[in-house]
Length: 290
Length: 139
Image 1: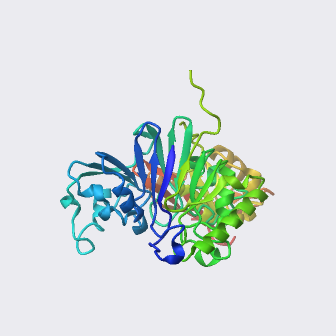
Image 2: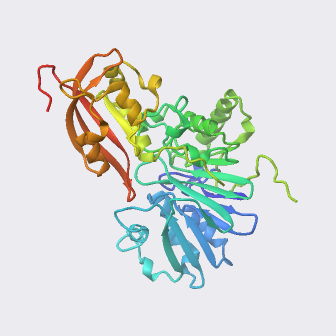
Image 3: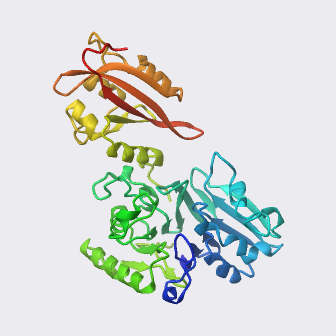
């Protein structure tokens, strides 16, 4: 599988000369499967540029973790939405309050939007993620609720022998001592267990976290502890704070690799997500083919 | 991609995190009415921290800590109004006695409410205890 980052920023777009290397677009990943199928993870503003690359696609699946604006804001500017021949299926968390379509339509409707969902030229459908794992484009997917503010999912996606977990908004250490807690009591543990790549929230440095406890995001040390506890082989630090410049994110990356080494791990297993970067994800042990 | 289904539902995880943070004695039950967590305040009341007890089935819990009625007679969990209410997805309030690890019995007032996050019913319940003054009659 190849994962490409189209938006790594959290909370709100953060364009500007000091953000150029990591990028200012909000959460969006493109997951290319070995069979040629593709999945889109979240629809932050990064999805606009991704849409320009999908000119030939007739069917597109978008997996939303939740409906905070930084994860759906790009939907209205996603070029395939305006092509009649395209079918778009949007998956997201269920709610007893309203359907997924109704909740997303609060954004894609007047006065916030010049178009309504029903006016989009493409064929778009909305589906609650199933309670159990399901097949999509040749991948096996599981969605589970994780600790964040409001109903929020994390995804585990497996294709062949390769597995990734995408948990971009997650505060598993809220009220919980991650290092000593039994796995069954750690939010997101089963989703991320033994994955080849974990894409995880790392919005704050440790010194910033005390002022943001309960905001739904992780500090660096908690992200590393979570990744270590679940046995992730590689870690992509994601959902950068909009106030963090390239220079600040470089520093966080250095801190992350130093701390990861202190946990007995190889520093090369950690990367900071940067817009435009691709990550080739391979299984821990190459699959044996007959 | 079989995932081992060992993880607790998020609502129970969050409930445990909350109970960890409060000083009111409190217990967390799972859908099978097993005690899957109690906090430090409850551990002090029972004379045994949760770390020493671990998960306890309803039968194990009853055998170790009660409840008892006002005369000291063991009360079957299934006969408690609280149990009935939780199983029916409703909150409940009751008074009974529990027995600490050193054998001392304490009258408590307890409030319980189901934790419901899906249409399939409660995934557990939260029970909070308030020790009663010994002169206060149980209700």
